[in-house]
Each structure stands twice: as structure tokens, then as C-alpha cells.
Length: 285
Image 1: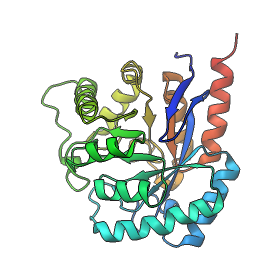
Image 2: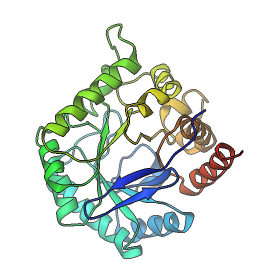
Image 3: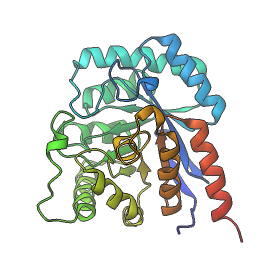
Image 4: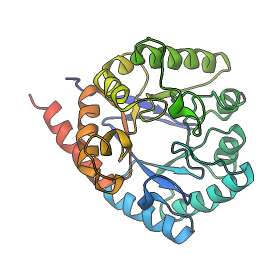
């Protein structure tokens, strides 16, 4: 069991000490994200989602405008930016203090989101592997960078789960460490690591990573876990994403006990309650 300690979130113009794990709420400005309730293509619906998240105690709202589910089709950079602008502006109309992140693997979109829309964090599912300009772009922007482990593309990643006899945990750690080193060489700032549950992993590999999450924590960077309503849960429980909240809560509990710093979730209230109870337990003396 890991006792959670304070850490510092190093934003562009300020840094502050974080005394508990952060809850990141998901808003998808897309028509095809795997969990239909997270989709919000029009500003009024985005604002409705954001308003509920803020009321439920969200710390960060993560806005994506391109679906990254297995087999998802790509949209143009222009369309991604257009969707993103509408969604981020709607979030900021609800709260100008809640932190925001952009879920994109394109450097141009990340730049647009930070410089034009005022987004605080870049969340890259590819860990810099799909756009070689991402590292220098984020370094220049001076914002925290969420580096997720993935192989291939959203369309091909589930064909790339064979790690050639290498332990999946070792492979993920090695790739993340290599990415961190290369990001540092470009002058990049804070890195938050994400094992990429569900991305180029089998169900069994996802649980091996969850079971070894303390090894990612030992890298010395904040760790984000995003398991919310994913197939690693609903396939094991033989249900649908719509019925996977209870399973998500169990996985989030395991992640927090192992030392996760950020939970990326569809259901903010459930995650906040999970955090409260886990922190109550970990802080018991």
C-alpha cells in the first residue's frame, strides 16, 4: 500500500502543491467516442457536462475532439481545431478557474489549444510517437505534458499487443523513460506518465500494468490512470461500457492505493467519493 504524498503541478505561469490525487473529467467533442454519454458536440451540451463536473468537484477537464478508440477514423486538423474551440470555450464559460487539458496527438492542435484557447495541459495518447514536432512544441509552450504509452495508431494499436516475450511492464517503462529523455532534450518541462491502459494491450496486460503501477510511480513523475469504463473492465465483467461504473470504481481504488496522482474518468462524482474514502484509509494512524 502506498501512502500518498504531496506533489507539485507545474503550470505555465504558476506552480502549486497538490495535496491529494486529482480527478480529471472527460468531455469528448466527438460523435464516435466509445462511451456515448461522454459525447458532446454542441456548446450547450459541453457546458452542461462541465457544469455538472464542476459541481461534483472536478480538478481538471480534459477535452478531446478526435476519437482515439480502437479502430477510430481520423478527422482533419481543421475539424479537430473547430470542435475543440467550441468545446473549450463552452467549458470556460462555465468556469474560468477549472484547469483544462487537451487530448490530442497533433502538435499543431496542442499549440492552438494552449496559445489560442488557454488550455493548461497537453494530453498526448501517443507519447510523441505520432508527431515528431510534439516534444519541441510542448517544450516551447511550457505546459505540463501527459505522456501516454501506446504503440501504432488508434486504427492499428490492437494489432500490436505482442511484446516479443518482453514483460509488458518492462516494455512500457522502457518506452516511457526513452520518451522522457527525448522530451527533456528538447527543453520540455513537467512530464506526467500514463501506462495507456487499453492502448496496444490485451486485457491481461492491462491488469499486469495495474498490478505493477508502483513501478511507474517509482519513475519519479506523477502518474495518470485512465481506465474509466474501458473494455478491460466490461469484457471481464461481461457487461457494456454503460454498466461499467462499479468496475471502474474498483480499478480506480486499486490505482489510488498504488499511488496514482490523477484519475481520468467519465464519472466525476464517483471518482471524488472514491478518492475521499481511499485518502481517509491511507491517512488513518
